[in-house]
Length: 214
Image (cartoon, rainbow, N blue to C red; front, side, top):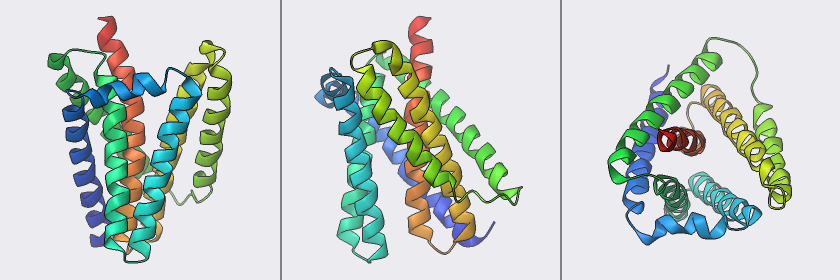
């Protein structure tokens, strides 16, 4: 692995650790109730978070490409806040003592998934360029199923599964893209961070449900 790739991984790891801390801090503020409000109508919650993540990624990457530092930082801040609020809403389902356990368990699981994804990319010569398109299809599926799920709550689990698959696919693509263009240190770092946190919040929901049932 090249030095540039290690720098990208270091950048994404730093952003991830900061975001997990933001998530935990937000869990003790009124921001943790936002998810309950927007998801009172399920499709509204999906659109709300989807728009913020899409906008944050667009601004961050555009700012990096155009060497516009303020725009890049604005996009990154939007991503941090969006994931922070979403994660805080999930953490609000359990008590403060259990939250750290949930975050640690989720971090371990998501890191293991990322390592496996990395091995899949680096130990094969497979072309994963199309996986970005696949992730877009999956996210469009989330939007469509979420609209139906607003009226038929039983389909929400399908939307969740599609979202998790979308972020997993996106994570593999971002790792592959880093392998192909290692010199794009900041773009790669942002991409892996976004994909990792997407998987993280989905896994966190599973972990929280398991802890809540105990």
